[in-house]
Image (cartoon, rainbow, N blue to C red):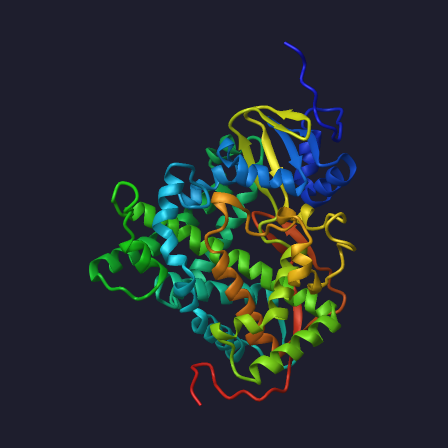
Length: 459
């Protein structure tokens, strides 16, 4: 049998050396591989072979054209310990069935109904916690805000009583995710380590909260107009005609709860940081908000006119995409770019790396929302920008995230400027999502605007 020809890539003296370099500095390592070895690159791991694909055509082929030839990678397979068989982790045919059941909950008309809730929660946060001249960790503030929003849109409750408990449990669970990528994670997870005990305890706390809410809702039969109400009554009319079990509801609720606040919070935190470093962009954003809103809170009807605000949010997700890496395991041999990727190998697609490719993004490190005018978007290949993935597994909550991001930025930016605390080093920490390492400490400066409505929408 002839030997296989590997794509170019970094070479190491010891097996798995490249994988250790990858785990120590994922962003730096992958950037070096992509820039140094081309659109198809290889590096050896323990025990896997890794192939980085860094061209829009190849990314589209994996996510769309040949999506059935791949399954989720190691990290999300192991994340089932927390998320179960939710949309983020499940595989066909279960994934297709669950997506059919969940899709009506994310229709545009349904999502638009949450606009006022999102804005009210943003204004409530700044009213209760922000003061002129106060120093804030904006990363934590956005986590607090998006947790409140997802709690109310998913469960129809502000979850005020459990908010601190949920935050702590989610943070503990997320902290353990990094270990799932280690070569011997399965073995480590069986050992009586303190980290494993903390994870099991945090998962149990989250389960208690979510199962209690599901039980109460089933008993009452009440439709509160939230996402859980939609999931409870969803029926698979195209398939077996069944509905979701409590366990399936738990898994989807956990997935929405985690993904629905973690990713958007990070995107918002990076947006505030980037605005503080680019005063001309910030000034233009403020000008649009003044023209469109005239001091009143934004609504869903304002979204088509908040074009520059949307462009700012899009450019933030270009530079710091919350889902910074996607992993897929090949279910069969796969030909790409003149090379053969064997069955069982791991394919890596990285929005962070692709979004900074100078072939498609001139001066890629520069923050420039003008990259997202309709003309500029039309000039680029489709998968040169994919913060929400693509194909059948494209994020089901994408419309929710766009609306939340734009409305929160609009609601807060017209009332506040956020200035980075001098001397602070802000850098990304690539975990399951792309968090700011050590947070983002900023000083709040109130802007003088006339506002006709308060947080509850009353004169």
